[in-house]
Image (cartoon, rainbow, N blue to C red):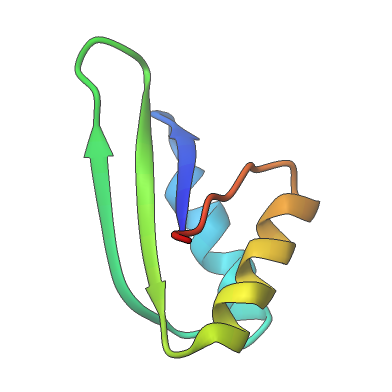
Length: 70
């Protein structure tokens, strides 16, 4: 999943906490930051398609626009 996040205090923690509260384990995590803007792209990998689908749904419900690889 790729998710745009703001470069501000707590942005990463908010997402990670949301997933942890729903017992979704993150397999891999990375952030690509664009120096020309105030945001970044959070990239998350999970342990299976079911976890990926649940995470995408939770993030969308919180107002994020998660993108998954086709």
